[in-house]
Length: 98
Image 1 (cartoon, rainbow, N blue to C red):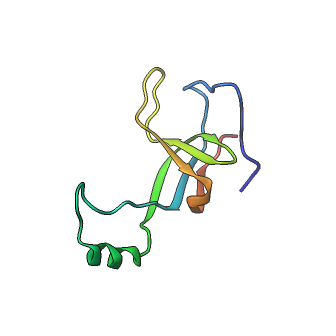
Image 2 (spheres, rainbow, N blue to C red):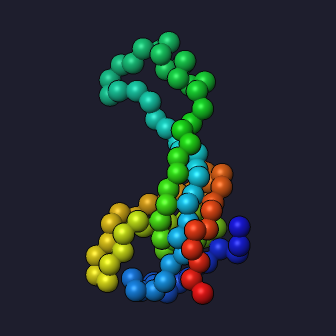
């Protein structure tokens, strides 16, 4: 991974952002509110955490996390997804601004 892009200035929505596919291991919380069956949760405790894939515009890359958006307009955007760098297993650069 390249040196993190930690900037104090906020980028503009019209700036070109790289597009990545990020493969990451998600943290997971299992169980319902209230009481749960201990045997079921002990069995679930041994299962691996889910592996996820996210594709988006990389709007921030720092030492602790990467932030991606799937949709960006001049004044509006979709949701921001922040993935801790320790969760990331692989990244594929799909497009890099020149």
